[in-house]
Amino acid sequence: MASTRVEKVLYRVPNDSSKKNAADPIALPPGTSSEDFKEYIKKAVEIVGEENVTVINNKDELTKEHYTDPSKAHDMFHVFDKDYFVASAVIAPRKVSEVQAIMKLCNEYGIPVWPFSVGRNVGYGGSAPRVPGSIGLDMGRNMNKVIEVNESGAYALVEPGVTYADLYAYLVEKKLDQKLWIDTPDLGGGSVLGNAIERGVGYTPYGDHFMMHCGMEVVLPSGELLRTGMGAMPDPTQPHVEGGTLDQQPGNKCWQLFNYGFGPYNDGIFTQSNLGVVTKMGIWLMVNPGGYQPYLITFPKDSDLPKVVDIIRELRLAMVLQNVPSIRHVLLDAAVLGTKASYSSSDKPLTDEEIDAIAKKLNLGRWNFYGALYGPKPIQDVMWQVVKQTFGSIEGAKFFLPEDVPDKNAVLHIRAKTLQGIPTFDELKWVDWLPNGAHLFFSPISKISGEDATLQYSITKKRVIEAGFDFIATFTIGMREMHHIVCLVFNRNDAGQKERVHKLIRQLIDDCAAHGWGEYRTHLALMDQIAETYNFNDNAQMKLNEKIKNALDPNGILAPGKNGVWPATYNKQAWRLTAESSLSR
Image 1 (tube, rainbow, N blue to C red):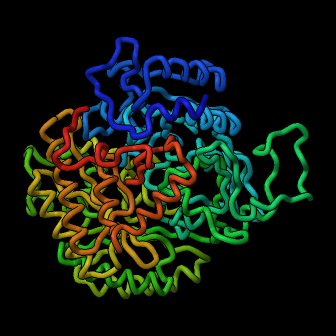
Image 2 (spheres, rainbow, N blue to C red):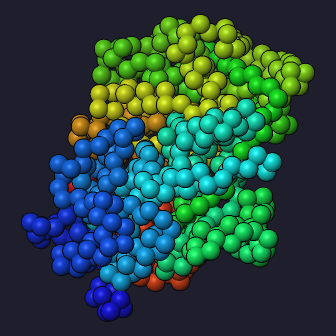
């Protein structure tokens, strides 16, 4: 029966929305009849319970558009029409065996499924699927337990629905927050597991989240269960759960201690991919370093950027800068503290004079570097001396500790928590820079050099201003590279702005590719274009990804099109989106 259903459609193309029946969901899965969809939903209800299946019937149901209460069915920050990237139904499994059963059911009917952890991957598409009509698999609604926090090993084992705020609250509840620290991104509402497998970043010394993960449990597209690294080795010394399923059995004692296990290292293929659904993940926690001091250094001129970046490179490589530094453009901080209308009545991009006036009003620089010292006070004192001496060579640099800034709403006080691993939600405010604020992230990678930073800044700033938007951005510095996160804020209810920002980001992708700068992460609509820029040796990497995809997922049911990887069962060209693509389905 399963093979018969799948063979009905071997080459899936976008549905003709004009042929939608009255009883159909807002978008049927491609190649799926109304009758088969109803049968599928009936069987899904039998697996997870009626309360955990929600069919999306029409556009009026797509009402949730805020980070604190995110949509599970569409892109809240929609640059395309609200009902473009949309799920036909959302299913929330309660346990791993139900995830396995849903995978098997999707294979039986040939219906695509798009897993997400919490739905707060905003700026990149949120919970929305790349293929309209996919089943949204809400992994976080019910599967949200902190399974373990191990104090001596300094790690946690979590399910997909555990947010940074949840994990921090757990540490506080267990009186472990003064012993173990988490690393959090700018906002604390995202999934710990989800952010790591999207290769997100934070700002403490543990800021590379995938680097700090250790061990996964994964459901493959077939429904088969595996554990990676040391988790692949059974541990007879661990207590057996009588009558429990495989996923309920304890893992190897070293599962969260040693990443690699034996043989090929598999974890990487489950990041930013469509090869498996991660149901458990280990994450290393930072032991309290015995002291902590956040600080801010402001630099008054645009032209200070290359000097700042070159100093950071030297100090980062020497490990004088212990954490993940960030160099923020003044308008990012300004947007946290107020809307554009609170600074200017202009509807055009702010001028240099207006930006300088804002910097003066907020006692900030054009560029603002947030960092921290970690360790006992004697270590801090030595590090601080080096930091002040090197950055002090830049004319006009000013140094601030939190006690130097009386305004408790100032960004330094927010970052003081973030750099200590305390989740906050304060930086949500910069999205409200414009009315009905939404944003896309444009995030190219470059080497840590003043020359690259200056060139990348000049190219992106020029394009952003030409498109009629304000330039808002930050450079986030890794061990040997920089993420340049350009925040493209637009009014999601303004069709003209949406069209302009869509063309803008596609132009930026091409501009940066011409300099060898590729993006590390992107929005649903741009995945094909960015994947095509990684085209060494006639797209050898993509061909490998497609071979693995088709081997593990021959029916192409798991997240087709994610990051440009399309299964053989889909007509890749028919699904490809470009600058000329309509923003409506």
